Length: 169
Image 1 (tube, rainbow, N blue to C red):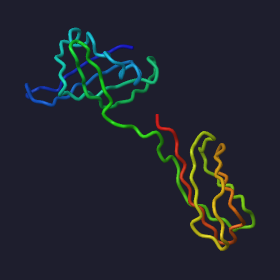
Image 2 (image 1 turned 180 degrees about the horizontal axis):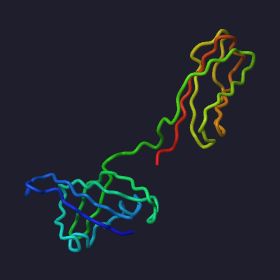
Image 3 (image 1 turned 90 degrees about the vertical axis):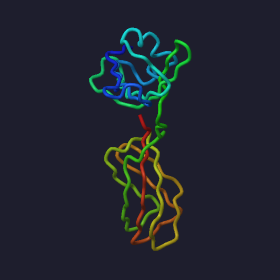
């Protein structure tokens, strides 16, 4: 867990609030969000922190990871304890796949091939059109397949729509 560089965007903007602080780290998001993460950084990097600053921070999944993630944080200080507080409220899940599947009926079970779906995904499905009255009873994701179990054979010209949610990271 280390801060590699800190820059404050105040060129020609001295005394302007709010201001931006750019922080490059080898830390994880959890480490960056820990209380007091910036303690000592002001002295080491010659930066004056204040509560009217927004930090753009690069983090790593692990300290030696090649890829970085960039997020926004606000600075929060009390005495000599300076912390970064996430600005955005990341969603717990995002839509990874969505679509419509035509089905000719004949069975109350419809297997939809969706390349990339995982058993750990959250899936929703609904009957958009059907010849016979049928409702969704169960939706189960497995590797590359979404299986929809209906209350009855939906008949010809059935259209199912679905959304696959994946945990946001």
